[in-house]
Image: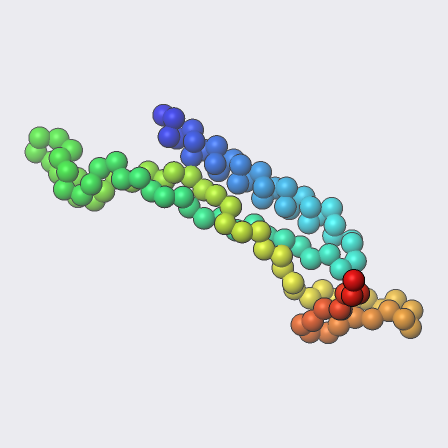
Length: 108
């Protein structure tokens, strides 16, 4: 029973991070130059409860193993650098980059 609770708790924690990331993306949708993020997940290890060929009853063997997943964890939070549409501002000093690239930062 406790194994199922730990697995469910890891899933809820991962989903909370996903909801927080989506909320951050929505909150900054009108911020100039904001790049949205995406959360990637991965399964944790699987634990074999019964191995293949082990007896299930006195006359029956388990044909395949019985495995239980131990939950999920966050693998990475990826920043998406997809290009958005250009917006003409009318200001002759405004710039944009078409294609891959960044504006260089000021040297310290």
